Image (cartoon, rainbow, N blue to C red; front, side, top):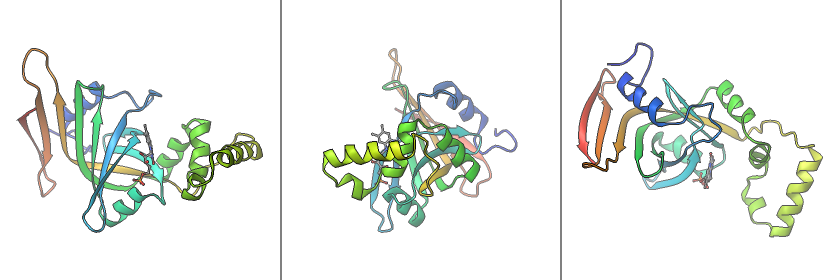
Length: 197
Ligand SMILES: Cc1cc2nc3c(=O)[nH]c(=O)nc-3n(C[C@H](O)[C@H](O)[C@H](O)COP(=O)(O)O)c2cc1C
């Protein structure tokens, strides 16, 4: 059921390719990333899905963020992709690990100048400044760097290796439905089942 050398069963892969925008599409899906902290308490936030391939799903963030601390303590995560809105949902359960540096660098290079600058100035200290100061410091930083922003050390990326993929689709003529692919606990094989929506 799985293409040799890939970690995603080929039937699930076909659905991903069919449902999600290609990695080259500048419009990135906004997804909900759920994590669990070192106390077992849950958290969730929106991130952009950077890309996906046969190994799994990539996102990028600040290495000093709460989600990065959660993952360091507890690498089990879930990603909920509502795309396109209201008709299709993919829920991915899996394990997050640092993405290869070459992948992280490529993701940074592909970001807009605004998002590159944000990667430098997205600190709690900056956020606490009065609005006028934030605007002035943003403009001063942009001018000092002539709009060219190297990749900061704080910029990190994660690869989520899936252990379960659940595809939900609506249907105007009949009930919504899910098809779910689960990796056996020993990691040996994938199984598929249908679930009520
Ligand atoms: C539409 C949208 C897209 C976002 N994309 C990202 C992203 O790709 N990476 C990221 O770190 N934060 C992104 N954020 C901000 C996060 O939702 C979150 O506020 C931030 O990462 C801090 O989360 P944490 O404290 O739970 O780690 C995005 C927010 C929104 C509303």
